[in-house]
Length: 343
Image (cartoon, rainbow, N blue to C red; front, side, top):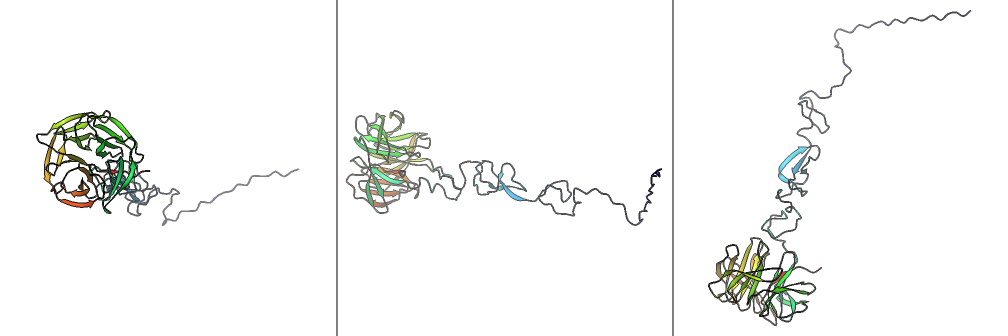
């Protein structure tokens, strides 16, 4: 007969807690008591002030115009990049998307590329040229005092006595060929001419764009300031002059939005204001104008003026004149324009 297995009763004896040691808890605090630990980027309120990761991390800069460049005067410290902020602090105008380091230097009177200079890199590598009576576009090197053939213009007829090249590189010209006096465009790289249409003018001596991209002209045949329709060529009179203008020329300073003109009868330069409209601020120069070519030179901030075989610089506010080059050219220069480099 089997002996029954009896249960064994185990009795545990309690151990008394030592009176000089407080009881401990098994829970771990989630914060460090205030004032006992510095705040670090870890998502925890290390200093116990009720805020997490405040006052630590990297400095970020507001990018309100979302161009990737930040405003150095609008900062935020955070452990991770906040929305609307970037690590870069080199934007000089955080309200304008096109203004930032490395931007194209537009001719607008603004430091577009944030290098503390204004419009100094406008039209990089553009070159000065004039159209000869033989239908060739010539390149002028003022430093070397040379003029050489660049591009032969196709279906050439008459004399191109006024040229203006728009910022988007389209060259407009006015052909002195009575009675049609057509407005044309041409490609300075291929030489292809496209006729827009007759202007209805008598003797336009200069054309220039305005800050609203309107194409204006000085008609010394009708003694008037005109505006051309760029789709038809037709000219509309804006201002009738109460004097004999003589051969003229026009140039546009896009930094200040100023249009300049020339009166070859008096050898004066002046400001053309199409908004009034009016001619004002006449200044006598030392250029012995006969034929007239006029262009604005952004690099020097002066007018370039050509007559016969000579090219001068003119300070438009004073009329101060400097001879820059005497060119070995078959014809008298009666147009000046800067052209973009060909692909």
